[in-house]
Length: 342
Ligand code: AMP
Ligand code: MG
Image (cartoon, rainbow, N blue to C red; front, side, top):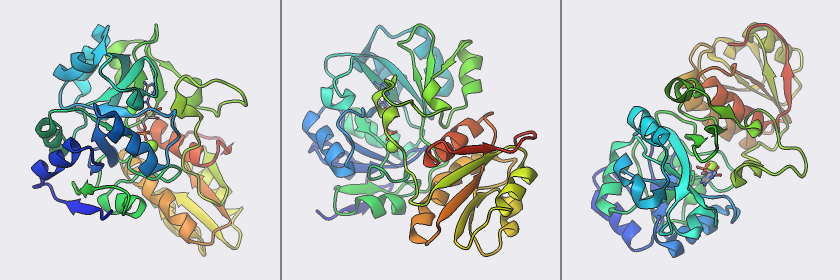
């Protein structure tokens, strides 16, 4: 199969690919997605094959407006409409009770479905033109970092899908925040592009699933199936260093070997001579760190580095999502060197 690159003008062609059960790379504000017609079970199954995704890791249903929620969900709590009004279109996925018309292929047979309205003008137009929801996980091959531009998605998916719509680089750079609204207390399942603080401001109490901050213990049952899968991890072991940023830089400097990779804040770029250095933005700018963290993780496997150290932001704002992606890449190998986190 030849994978075509479509432009923002090719809305009708993109919708036609979805109608005939094809696979389409879609730009969103978070990361690129690998989409198929969310009501076509056959097409949805092909997503799993193209990605090499485990069969029990469900997909997110993308819709162009909250008005479509009733079509695919039932027993929708008022909180869902509160959140949709404040944060949609935007980087927030809600877990709700599903209706019977949502194929098992999307939800992996669960009674709940994840739904989101993405904030990208081109994808919103495609969703309306298709007049069908689009089921999509991130557009990487399973086990690779999420793609934040069309070129990165093409690297992973060339020859495996029909087309990718190039909608430019992603504004947010990490995946959506996932909140489970079927639990007695709303529960954060994955930190992402919408900060936890914003959810708490809108809803009051929001619980944080244990898997956000620590790895699951052996044999422990995850709240959501996807949580048990390892995210992308470079081949070389990664150590995440938390704490005040001058201290984390000093800690890393003292441990540099001959082939060391470093993920650091812009302010410290020059402090690791002879290393493969990937900076992710100022320690003050968590939005920039989110935009760049996956791109930084992408480079190390093409270099010969034998160990990777990463400076890490604190858990406030978008820092929770950035730190979570870094810690997952490190298999939660974390060293705290003290002091106030950036
Ligand atoms: P990805 O965008 O590649 O991270 O894939 C979609 C994410 O949404 C996965 O981590 C899934 O586990 C999660 N997800 C989708 N549907 C559900 C659901 N019904 N319950 C819990 N998590 C879900
Ligand atoms: Mg993914």
